[in-house]
Structures are given as C-alpha cells and as structure tokens.
Image (cartoon, rainbow, N blue to C red; front, side):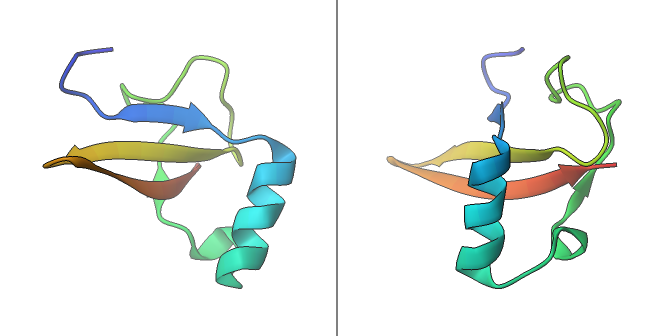
Length: 68
C-alpha cells in the first residue's frame, strides 16, 4: 500500500448489517469496486464490503464500496 492511498478496511458481517440498516439501503445500491483494484486487501472476495477512509484537510471521511 502506498502512503497516499486511502485506507481500505474489510467490514465484518455485523458491521455490514448495521450499515445497511443505518442508511436503509441494499448492498446492490452501494458503489462497486473490482476485486483486482490495487487497494483491495488480499483476503477479500466478491460480495465483501470495504470502508475506504480518505483524509480531507483534518477530517477523515469514509465511503463504502462492495467488491464485484
């Protein structure tokens, strides 16, 4: 992982359920990311959800993507 690359974290199943419930969405409504993307951790497979933390100024912003 490069120092400028945002942190990619694989969510646990209970965290995914909480995310879906919080935003009242389904997994198909999340943005997609390919499993071959350089930032995707090695232990991930199709259907897993990643939390991507980007630093903007002094805040950390999170976005969520599902692996296809």
